[in-house]
Image (tube, rainbow, N blue to C red; front, side):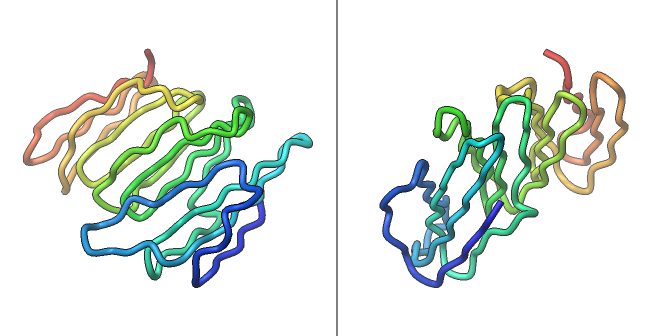
Length: 159
């Protein structure tokens, strides 16, 4: 994985995927980043068009080698890229920088206001509302959240 961040918008030629970041109302897209990713001889080049002050780094990505999917967490969004088909499979809103985690064959996405579980191809298993401060108990097949606003919520980890 090679990343280059630029303080301006770079030309859009020769990219496999172009991703325009979701922004707050008053933000303008004024800079960009380039991601070059290679796995098993397959190369993918992704251009990120970003708001001022936003850059990407390796900690923003979670690669799933079994499916050749790349999960990305942005400032107020998360995405899943299918590197085989060079496409954006999911592009979802978040209230702030979400947390991505892989647990066996499940991807967990935590935001301040929701938790989602997906399979390794970003297909939703479950999504539940949460609100901080939230306590959670992890089980093999679910995560139970308890938050002051939404009460007890159970996030399924198996379809």
